[in-house]
Image 1 (cartoon, rainbow, N blue to C red):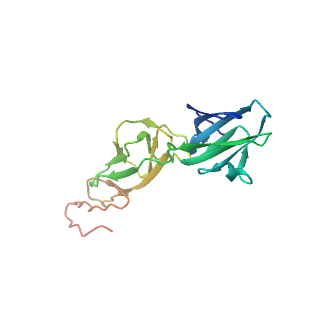
Image 2 (cartoon, helix red, strand yellow):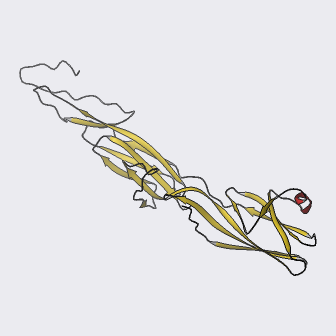
Image 3 (tube, rainbow, N blue to C red):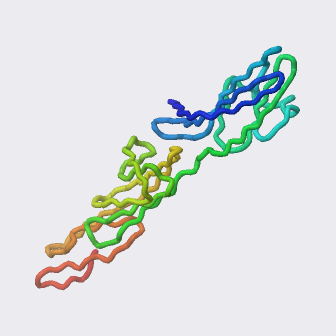
Length: 231
């Protein structure tokens, strides 16, 4: 499904022949709660008190009336853009009079916040994961569900970091979003190593560690025996 969200800005332009009204609004294409892209939708209204409006067209960049003689994409009532830059709108009436106006779109945000996961590296049954995200982050998610494919509960935030205790093995995902709904997802794998003391005792009996980290195995004890090593 496609859903549009709007905030209104107005552009007006007129000539002796044609009056045009351009309403520029933000839009977001949404699919299953996942933002595919952000941009602007330019709603077009053109009237002519003389011969009437024949067509509306556009070209990317800053253009003149002459550029539209054999070029330009014909529009009906809107132009959707997903990149910053200049866009020239052209209106022609039935008497052959043409006019252009240039819109300079500068505030489309398609840059996702940064995100990273680090972890303590203790010989312990749990670790503390530190979640770090960019200052433009407004919501984050951390857990074992991939937010790219699953509806998850996003947590509002005004800070740039958070912590979480990891006690189980698995792939953990950190997702971050900004006010434009740009999204970034990173992940880390945590492993659980279970220690079998073979009739002796060892503490801790298991160790959680993040992929890429290493640790020194604890030494077990057994009355009457000397520990030779792990295998």
